[in-house]
Length: 327
Image 1 (cartoon, rainbow, N blue to C red):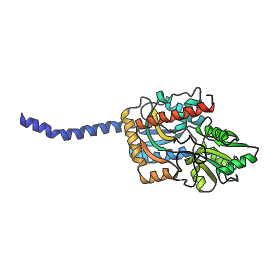
Image 2 (image 1 turned 30 degrees about the vertical axis):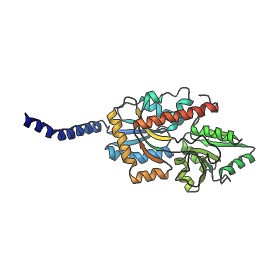
Image 3 (image 1 turned 30 degrees about the horizontal axis):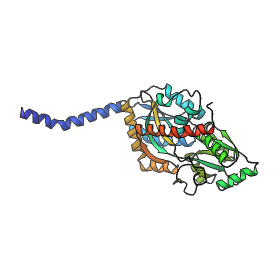
Image 4 (image 1 turned 180 degrees about the vertical axis):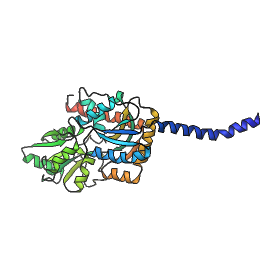
């Protein structure tokens, strides 16, 4: 009896290894041969660029093909609806920032999806801030210069935004109220066409994410004059925050994350989240994303879910105070 007990005890470490291997094998077996990573904005914008950086490394980490699929329209609404209709088998995921997941359901009467019911968080990988920029044809070198310039235009100005009823639109409303300006938000179908019009001096100013602006700002093709957030951005150390300019209350930082249809197996979610953590820890990936103005950091599913809920509370108040009515 004693010998049998010793034999069984000696087998325990090997059994633990076998069980772990079986668990990993099950998770990997659930990884599809082709994974579609939906993006709700057109090619050429910041979100698209970020998705392609991650997809390039995730295919090796997961051992499967990862295809970025652009479904632009309605600020990511069409992409979110596509995710809701997708099979919950891990073959389709949605890479999105805060607007589609958090803001859009609060500003659209019939979004066609409910983030809390239809999606599950998979992995967060970065936070970022929105920024205000002017085209090269605008004479403003600082934000105060821009305010003064608008006043020479009878106080009227047009500011481009990547999507209607988005955080950039609400920022335009807050700017107009704070600085006593008559500003109109002009919505585009994503940041790429907005950038094209700004670079062509077809529109004098715009609000979008730092990743959307950063490359052209560094090239001198447009000028970022202010950023949101509680501190200046490492990628734009000379650009003041709106808080510094007297416009507080917008310090909470938006996020980027990956989401799956509700019902997606937990084993796959955990595997994919771990793969994202490994990819963003790669020096070349971290460098690329940081240079785009992102603050890189992995958020497992539960943490991403908490951030989503907290961010929704902040913007629910801002939207309510603005008097905006869902459309």
